[in-house]
Length: 398
Ligand SMILES: Cc1ncc(COP(=O)(O)O)c(C=O)c1O
Image (tube, rainbow, N blue to C red):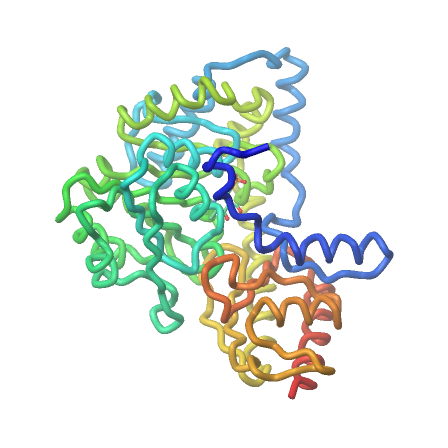
């Protein structure tokens, strides 16, 4: 049967091949060192689970308002004020089934055929696909290691055309871990404000996972003009180890928030009532578990970075946020191992899995196949042994 063009154009995930192979190996009883996952390996903190159990026992098991309960919206409004210096009314908040869903709603209500969306690369693959699903054209701007994988004001200016409708920002970034400073965002904001009608979608899902004393800055807080142009997307998945609970949220100018809420009311209705109750505990309760998780992530990042940089030919800027490392492995291209030639990061990722059972995501998934992505949301023993294996294998390539 013929599918709609909308469906036919959706790419299958480039990570899928590696992922299914890794799963197959695991099912065969092979130990796989998995660096592919994009979720914290910690359990959801107990006080958040308790809030969910209380919600069930209190009968909070029915529909809620489509865009979220008043209690959760209040907790989100308070969070924006306290942590980001942003003032929103509750009707500017839309709670959805994960930040991915918030982003989907945002693209659906903002862009259509003929519109362009500027997306700095390396990008998160769902950003790209969601732009395409909405019918718009992604305008990919390649950032470089030298610039810390951040788009420059000049690159942004050059990419803007009369058709530009949205600029997508993602700080801290998946896959590079890059974090934009206040000054960098101010300069990007100046460029955007020179052009009428450009909206910013700012994906801040990794906000809490920032290291080295850096602060998270939302571009929306830099001026009232920028706030009027920005949809801030955030959620509880990464900060509170709640990936399975599916709660994300967006804060937007009122007309955009209303459109997103309307769309959602006809697509999925409210996100899960119980997960919403748990998210209030996450946002309003103790933040100590986040601090503990951050300490562990920093330890892992530092160890992995040191080990990777000690491998000849590998370069990798120090990521200041999220839980990913994104090393450049292109110096290995053209080399081979037992008759297999490595032409790109996809080949290398395949070799790592086949030969030493280490699963990583090739950079092709993020728009640049000179790199591979490691998620360090895995334990230290796995990290140590996997790096021994990688080091040994790479030393044998010739
Ligand atoms: C950059 C980015 N945005 C959004 C999401 C989606 O988060 P959620 O699990 O809340 O849908 C992810 C998850 O991997 C992500 O990496």
